[in-house]
Image 1: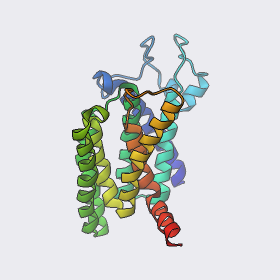
Image 2: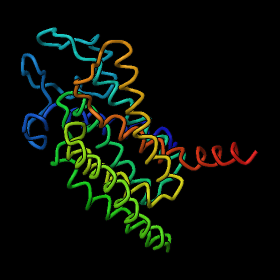
Image 3: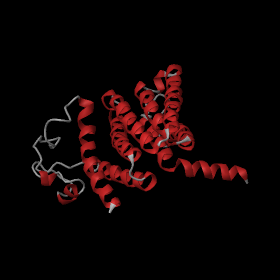
Image 4: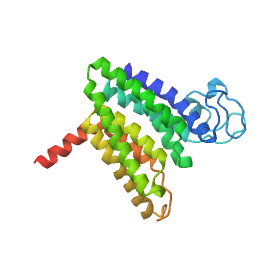
Length: 257
């Protein structure tokens, strides 16, 4: 039942994430106004706005102008739902899990915004610091583990400082949005534990480098291409959040043989 609830809630939140992706880069309010077709601007009825199912029912086209509806909408909704399920299976349903659910939603939004406009907007990243801080304080209080909360500060300084250094050395290759996001992701990784922080710290650059190498090999990127780093940064962090302990244990076991 919890898994089903995670899927349903994740799909609903994923629909809201699609609104953030569409409106935040343009400065449009995501609080006011109903969902509408991006082509004909016709407001959508509630039955045309059911996550995933409306896209299938309408056969991927707007009811009013018959314009194609991007497959990104169900992908975003499904991705958020999948992350919600994974969070529940790995971290249960305490304050930390609810905080990670919030972080999952904004992570998906930021990744797709970065792919679109190569920007990680402050309007999403900066408010997430106090929100996640509140969740971590609540979790530390409920678990009686203030040492983990101290680790959150170490994670923030480690990842935030690392990306700040990279930005200072080569600002053309990294944006300030990556630096600010790195601090946020490091804070959460540090709170969860050393293994999570280590895997999240290392996986981001590895994923980013792999994307560049593959992109250059297939001709999509060249030496002066601007490559959005957000997907690798967030992907690496979430690899740590969901599988950091297992990956670290497997790595240690491999070298111990």
